[in-house]
Structure formats: structure tokens, C-alpha cells
Length: 295
Image (cartoon, rainbow, N blue to C red; front, top):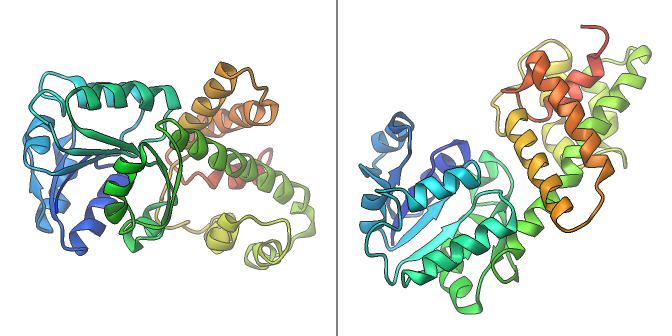
């Protein structure tokens, strides 16, 4: 299939590489063109504009920073919808509020194209291995059309409802993880006086009910960081996590739902970012809080 990818952050680039390995004819575009070079070197075609990307693809996947980026990429003068896109499939994978996806779907469908939202759970490692978790929103027919492509990216694709449902589900599953990183930091802080070597401490936590799946996957990276070493590759940075948390809070307010824990968590993440952790891995929230007051 001819697949276009717009948005080449860490996740977009990983998704593009995965689809190339699956045998698709992949075209890419990014607002900052230099991010396309590694994929071009690997054999992807680089489109000059978003409109050009849409013209040369049958299915277009977008994974963008926020609602403003979606608006610019889809609706700008040379945006994805500026040309004839009738009959094409758009799969929007950004983490944004449901209202953003619903409004976008209406415009895409108004141009005669199909639209599915499918934000995903997972980071760059699962993306490269085709082991993400997809939360699809859209009509039965459109999701069925997108499913073969999504199943090459995801170990599980759940069709959770119409457009907007996928975004709502993504915000819901990310919320406890963000709170968890803060909770882990607090747990590490109150056990600091025990002087347990970080790798052993994280191993203990990972083998108990005090761990999330994320800790089971990243515990030793966190241990290395706590010991003064290098965490390793950043898969999702703390400032991006702050953006997602703000989106959760906005969605809660729009629906009249109180979210006291995540609101407090945002204040903690803001503090960590101001202390220089913004571009560190999101799990750095735990590392920051563990050493807070000592550094």
C-alpha cells in the first residue's frame, strides 16, 4: 500500500520505519524537513508539502503534537486537505481531546475521504515491533478498512466507538500512568534512608503490587539513572507528558468531572520541568522526586 506519514517525531518516525519493514511504499513529510532525512536514507520518499504527501498516498497517517499542529497540517494552504483527497483513508493518531478529532473527521469526510482516529498506547520500542495498543474510533466500515494497516502496528486494536471515543480512551489509560510516575517518586523518596542499591530497590518494587507495567519494562533504566548513570534512549519526554496531562484536565473540565489527583500531578511535573527535566524521559518524574531536597 502507498502510505503517507505526516509528523516525524519519535513515534511518527518509528511508525514509518515499521511500515517500511512491512513492505509498504512509504512517503513522509514533516514541518521541520530535517527530521525526514533518516527515513529518506532508509528508502522513504520525502514529500515537499503535506498536500504532496496526500496526493501520492492511498492512506495517510498523522501523529502530531496538538490541536494547533493538526489544524496547520490539515488545513494550511498546502495542507493535507488542500487538494483532491476523495477516496483516501486518513488515520489520525495524535493525543488530543475528542472534540478535536470529531471536528477534523467532519472536514475530512466532507472532502470525500474516510477517517479513523487511532491514538496508541506504547512508545517507540513497541512501535518498531508492531506491539502498540490501538484505540480506534470511527464507523465500522472505516475501521475495517484501516484495520489491516493498524494491525501491522499494534498487538491489539480495539474499536471503542465512533470518532472521539479513541481519544477519550487514550486519555483515560494515560492518566494513571502519569500519576504513577509521581507516586513512584514519592515511594523512592520515603525509602531513600534505607540505602538500598538502586538496581535492587527497583527489582523489589517491580516484583510487587507497587509496580506498573511501565516499571517492569523500565525499572532498570530508572535504577541506572538513580545511581548516577545514563537512563538510555528517551521514548516520551516529560514536557510531552505535561502536554497530555493538560489535555486530560481540559477534557475533565469540559465534562464536569473533577480530577484532583492529575491536577496535583501536573503541578509536580511543572516543577520537575522547571528544574531541567523537561526533555528527559517522562519516568524522570520519579527520579526527580526521589532526590528532591537533596539536589
